[in-house]
Image 1 (cartoon, rainbow, N blue to C red):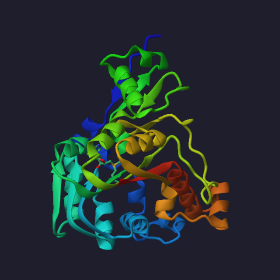
Image 2 (image 1 turned 90 degrees about the horizontal axis):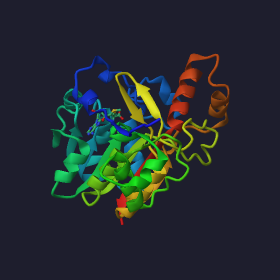
Image 3 (image 1 turned 135 degrees about the vertical axis):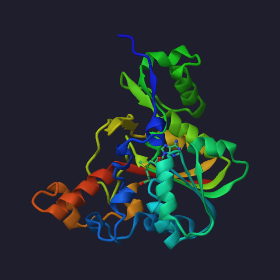
Length: 312
Ligand SMILES: C[S@@+](CC[C@H](N)C(=O)[O-])C[C@H]1O[C@@H](n2cnc3c(N)ncnc32)[C@H](O)[C@@H]1O
């Protein structure tokens, strides 16, 4: 069978007017409301943007930033809570969806120094002629173009086609593609995003569902997501996303001159890991609505990883 690789894209979906644009419930959105039942799973319940501010303060020793760029800010929920918990002189919200940008304008109305730019995140940074202090890209790397239907034997052929481009990127950064399933997928857009941001940002925080989550103590009790270490299709209403291989991104980031710290999202949100929550996860939350929701959040978060990049 002759399969040709193709590019999974979501830009048409995000730019378009499908009602399903607003259907995806992200981790940020599930923790958004003050009475969110999901917040019971957190050690110190707070909106997601405040958790991001706390995580950065722990790692960087500051809650004060000059220019912050958020890429793919969805409803603006993250940035609104972030600005309640941290300081930024200027904020730029970059999103290719006009409808999500409208939501961000509403969520951030009245906040001084906030600009909204309708653009692709990587293109925005390629065109930028200066360096910003902090970039946040939460749950959108899996939306960026992913090469799918790749066959391992196509990688050696070279050329300007998709397989040739993947082989060139893998060679440039020393990415291990040995043992790839047939066919497999490659997060080309996520790599291109890091390349675009390199040299333009002092600190970068990205999170996304991953195909190779590392869950050491105290989060080793969380369930292992499927995927076997290779990007997996996540079929959503009217578009597909792909999980991201974080070991590849970490390597690319280091080659681009960043110090890279990889972490489970459980750590960023401060997921509880006491006996009660372990037992809820073990029993899959059966029998009680709140336990079911807590378990749902834990299973979801188990798949998410983050990278904190700082310039060397
Ligand atoms: C899954 S939502 C995540 C929203 C939000 N960050 C959160 O965590 O709730 C993806 C967001 O990324 C935006 N997006 C998708 N592809 C993009 C791209 N290439 N450039 C900029 N924004 C993009 C979408 O319009 C949307 O706002």
